[in-house]
Image (cartoon, rainbow, N blue to C red; front, top):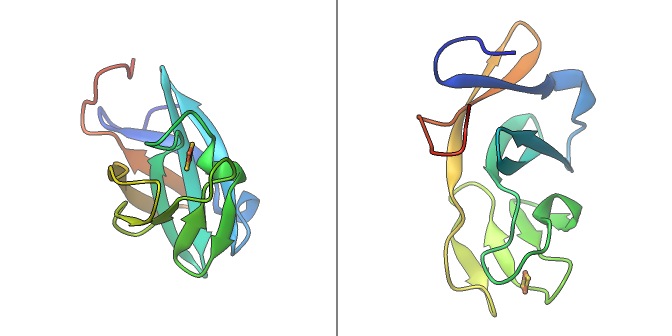
Amino acid sequence: MILSSELNLVCAVSDLEPGTAKRIVVGRLALAAFNLDGEFYVTDDTCTHGFASLSTGIIDGHLVECPWHGGTFDIRSGAPVDRPCTVPLTVYRTVVRDGALWVDLGGKPGVE
Ligand code: FES
């Protein structure tokens, strides 16, 4: 479901409990949606070090630890904070509207 030309539905806010993550696919993009105590973030789901799904990682505060090699990212900025990760994640703008979480992919290639 598309709200505008750039906003894509992620999930109902009630489906993403605080301190959890959910993997979603939009077009050919795999994304990870995080609820950090009521603040919502959407990043690429695939770790920049390998092909692990970060939505299955360990969330500790505003950090997510990759389930494969333990690299860590700041979910809010996408910045790598612990090796072996050195390349940042893309973080997308989110919108909460009418009880749903939306993501603005900004015309990223691969989104239909
Ligand atoms: S695949 Fe994520 S740290 Fe290696």
